[in-house]
Length: 215
Image 1: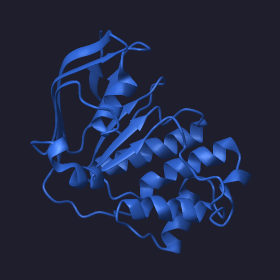
Image 2 (image 1 turned 90 degrees about the vertical axis):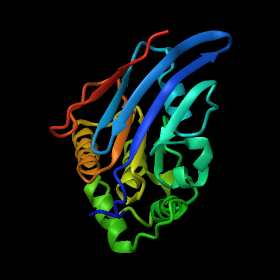
Image 3 (image 1 turned 90 degrees about the horizontal axis):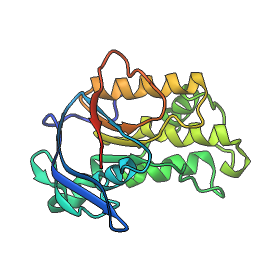
Image 4 (image 1 turned 30 degrees about the vertical axis):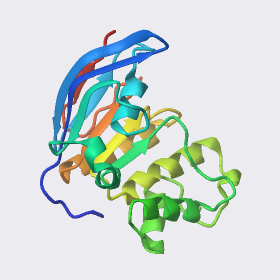
């Protein structure tokens, strides 16, 4: 199921990016270009700034020095359009506990300008191994089920750029394979992905473009 119509082939690039926290330099002079259909694996020791880089790419943290370009234009110069093309998944599931699974998925999709029907939602939940949960309150789900519901939002996203910070955490082997296959499908449809992961995961047959961060 492809929920978005491809326009021009998207590109993401970094130019001379620097980042410091609390007076300590995390990384500096980062240059990188990512083309449509490719994924970037951000690696490095703990505390070197992997999450900080992903938050900068997602517009959640300021760019200290350097620039991030989306389709050749700085992201700060096209904030609204860039947000429509972006889907960020951080450490937290970001689900509303007092809402149903269906309400959570519909709300997130609406933020991206989409309105998935009930059949689409049911199909995605079944794909992620949580079938028949659409009317259940999130607070009644197990932690593993919450993680699968949260990640299922990717399948309903129209964003061309996925930024995923440790998406495989707390996932069993089956869940890891489901998500890896979904990312691979996204790439074959012309999307892009950036991710960090403490575990080695193959994304289809698509080799990773690796970015090693060093202070």
